[in-house]
Length: 197
Image (cartoon, rainbow, N blue to C red):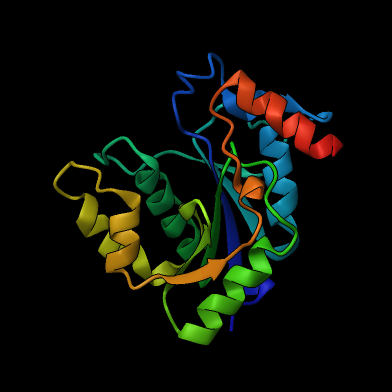
């Protein structure tokens, strides 16, 4: 069973934000930064919180994590850093979300935990009518070895492919807008409109 005292939280904030034009984690939405929105969604379900990447995440009360030495650029290297961090804290699970998904639904963590518990899978990821949301997931820390091996050749595999090979369970969410990724200033405006609605 997943439990708060056995779960860590990880915010992925290591991207270059090239389309956005400035660090996305710092962008403001309804009076809080994108990273603060994600932290607020994860924190009730985790014992400790970390951030992979250091784009404007000071003040979150989270441990900053660098990618493992020699790891290729990409989100799975951040996840591996998080898995190692969580294992070091004797945690069994890692709840992961990107910093640019500030509208995650209230049932995000409980539904992932239910999918993992029901299936016995070491990974549960969110899915909507738009497809898999593979960076929104709940990972068993025992996946660190398989992920380290997948990254060992210096290439970053597609996230969905690693999830498939790990036998990921799927947690279905009806409202795809809750997984809006803020990649542009237009996306940020859309998120503001969704919040006002």
